[in-house]
Image 1 (cartoon, rainbow over the protein chains, first blue to last red):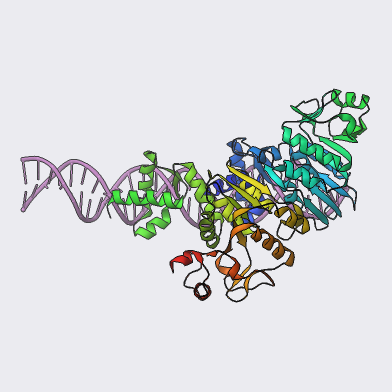
Image 2: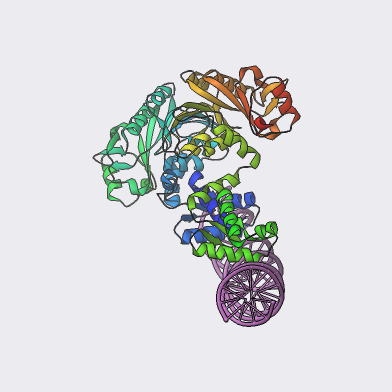
Length: 254
Length: 254
DNA sequence: AGACTACCTGCAGAAACGTGCAACATCGCG
DNA sequence: CGCGATGTTGCACGTTTCTGCAGGTAGTCT
């Protein structure tokens, strides 16, 4: 295998998987991790990928539309994910929305947690495959490519049979006045359908979402049980608190 | 061999393989690596290829990308996938089973193919996300972790609404007497349910599956439209043919 | 806080590279 | 036919690049 060929392979893998683990690739290609890391360092220097601890994620939006957003802020999202994961109690049934933040939640679940996860995101399913005690229910339907989740009439219909304790909702905007918003009407409807199937809905908001407003409203703030965020000393957090919204995560300590 | 003739050969090799190793070509043509390198230097100067350490790659990145991906798949599966991909006609609706072989088929689909793919495999969905003109329908249900597909009552129920031209079926065993078999009863039932929803079912059998028998029968050979395989000069292939099974792929030439 | 993993740096062997040179064939011109 | 010019090929040499390993550092998980 040529070195240049290997670089292409790494980039192709980044495109298709949205991430890359140096150790795995080294084993797969039969060479040392050092070489893989060297390649990743160079690709990153050329702006073709972004290095993260353990491997790399795509960098160029043109190359990886969905996959890029998937790990945009690995570290900042981890805090939200860690707190949100605690909302899923052992033995309970939880609905996980699609998106980068909920994906981080799936990864943050304890390895031996026993529970049932319902999701409309194939990506979430992949992340949970190695959890032996997690039962996974996938909601089928037409796949909405932009964010790699199912939506549409069939998906809403399939969701009707579900009853869950919590729904962890991902949005692109959290605003004191405009509420919870996202960029696509179809997705917003799907999120609402899922929220109706859970006793408590918690919105996940990594720091860049706070104060942002997208085009389509998902739910008003009064309809959710709380917001998990890692923002702190933040005007938006304070205002949400003042309006009686239950703030969880790092913000709870502020 | 004329020098110009050799250059053409090098370019042809670059086109077909997506790469070229100077050392190999020198051995193959029976001349020194220096000559090959000299040729490559000139071709690169003319913009006809790109030099890399160890050899060269085509000037057009698209070709190299395709070749790289091709290398990742084991060769035996590649042949099967290539032939099977042709069974999905533009504009048609196809059901893709889960498994590594059907995953290879998804990757082998032309980038601009317009069609609808129905699948119960989240992995297949991921592989098809970058095909802009492929509509993806995901069948939901309980996720069977071992092979990362949905099955169970809900999945069978969801499959009922589907009608497709072809179903590309992955199995672990293809045997002249025992028919098509797989290792899990639940999966076998799901595969049967999918087969009922398609006009024609084709089984995909990379060479190691030929003659193998697993524990649970999926379908008898009489229920399928054909078997796509790359086996050839093979007792099992000959016997299947003798029994009237339509053999496609490399075996068709035998 | 401790164990663990991933990371970077420097180093050494191996492989590939480019350059200069000599040997050989081919061709054009007298 | 003779002779030089031109071009191609292989070899030798020094240089660059790649790769894996060792050692020390930093980041992560429990």
